[in-house]
Image (cartoon, rainbow, N blue to C red; front, top):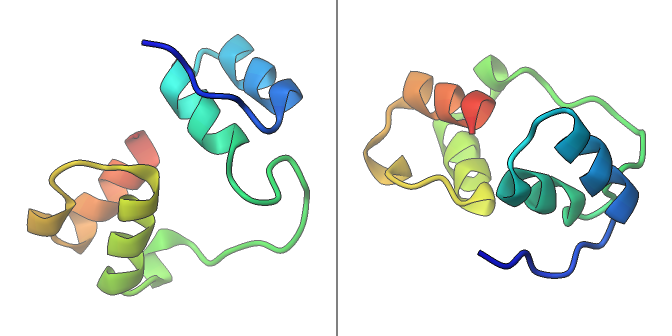
Length: 79
């Protein structure tokens, strides 16, 4: 599988060096503000199910529509 262009090549390479898959590394490196430090988000347990669903959708987690809140959290942390 070819990886589309990566917006933050340095972050992509750092993630690959840590053992992340090509797909996950590219997805993270292509997020807006990739590699920039900033505010901290709340732990997933404090998110609503709808917020978790939207996050799962944005990172391309399959089967999210049938997941409950705990399953969405697990999928987001282990994707």
